[in-house]
Image 1 (tube, rainbow, N blue to C red):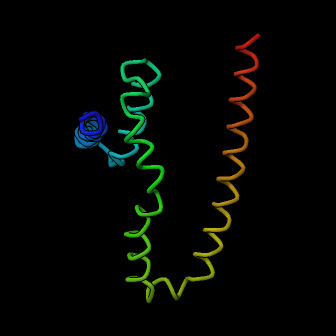
Image 2 (cartoon, rainbow, N blue to C red; image 1 turned 90 degrees about the horizontal axis):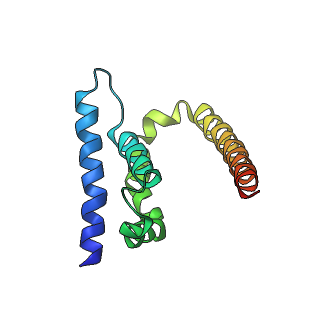
Length: 119
């Protein structure tokens, strides 16, 4: 029963994100809004980590499964991608390195904040 409650919490946050995206006067992904909302709720301790732990663990363990639709979409549109394949691959490589760099800097900043907060 706990897993159903956790799914309900996550889906509820996603629903609120969808509603906020519908109200905004400009297009913005509801999934990003929901993720930020969940982060804020966790930081404000409205939602405790144990409220969504099993659901989060399940999603992390099965993350590769959620990339299948994107892969199928790429294969379905490969004819259109073929014309710009080198540019597409260059963007993928460049953004991968940018993501690595930003992630590393974020981890360094968080570790510095944790050290500073611990003293």
